Image (cartoon, rainbow, N blue to C red; front, side, top):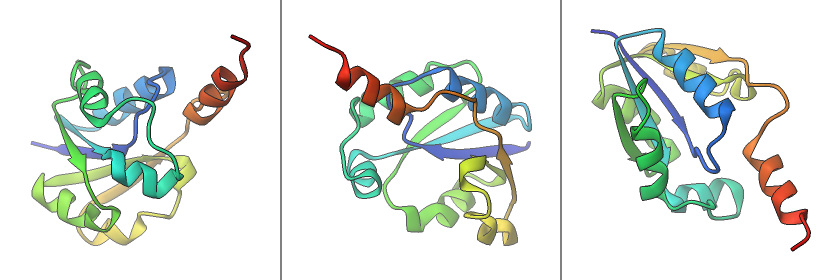
Length: 132
């Protein structure tokens, strides 16, 4: 059984999220997704997600390609999460290239290309600028 793990905030869910999750799932038997807690998201981005962590978990858990979701509380616990879920491969977007090479002592790491021309930040900015 090959367990694949990935992490993300997955706020304002879009096709780029679907693309990376489907591609990640294609590398193994089980796709496990760590979803950043609301507090972790705030510490990383200096803003809370648009959707709360329970809603983001429900969205990701509803996808056919995802086998398990959990809340990622702390960035420093990545290696612990990888071990806990017996992951053999960590998949991240290529905007993180090199950032997680330190876990290679426990599992393989692949950085997949992001979907061009779409990002949660851009969507939030566009929606925020739209007239009411």
